[in-house]
Amino acid sequence: MDIIPKGARAPIIHHYEGDFTGNFLAIRAAFLYQLSCGSTHITSVDPSSKLVINVRYLEHQLNLEVPARFLIMLKRQRALGLSASTWSPTVDAAMEHRTT
Image (cartoon, rainbow, N blue to C red; front, top):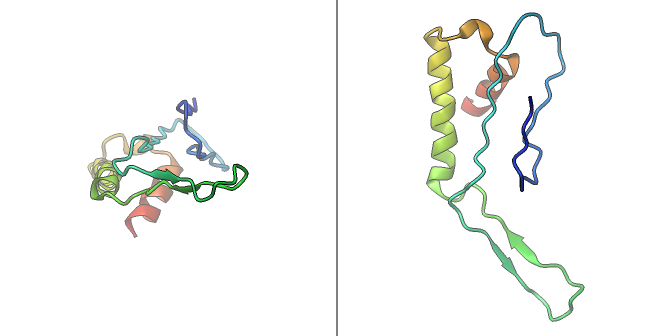
């Protein structure tokens, strides 16, 4: 089951296209409440002009630290053999992408 949190504007769901044989566990994590406060600025008196929006993603150290520790925890669990037979192939791809 895919759950998209209310208010999430970015696509956080990745649909893996491949052959699945057997049962798998797919773990998805999203850091929805970042610690960096973004800003919106009015740049002109013209109401049709666009705003300057700076979301400041990953500017606070903990915004990087929390997801990194989560991925390290997943990698350790996999290395210890905890439910290793039920991991989804997307977890392998995500861990390789994030840790390299």
